[in-house]
Image (cartoon, rainbow, N blue to C red; front, top):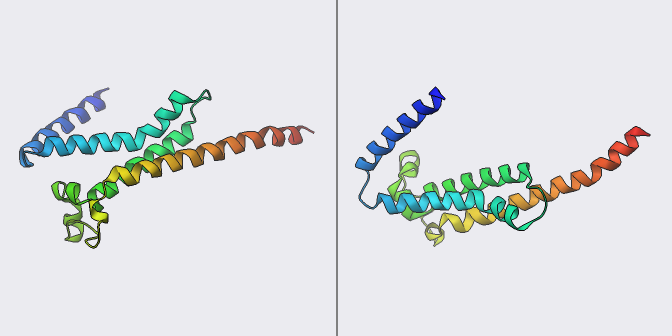
Length: 145
């Protein structure tokens, strides 16, 4: 509990300092970034939990959360012009504000890429686990004989 409180206090101080350093439109962009990450990470598992009768699959949800978060952050921080400009991590690392300056790919929002990837990974891991579940009883039966 003590470590949790210390980490929360440190993050609070960092956020307050960061808010004073960043431009005035940071609130809108940060909210958009947070909502995009949340949608890409959690929406596939949430929709599955709402609309299916089966027990939610933990591995599929975890894989979807990881892929959704990582792909969203990568696209937002290194590809998309509007978010990579206000969080200049790409510029600090590469010297350029975005990785690809040719074409219209730099104007594509990160959610357009991250959400389908997250859905595909969720579905793939779910199908693999279901196939494994169907095979396991036959493996256990043959081992018992």
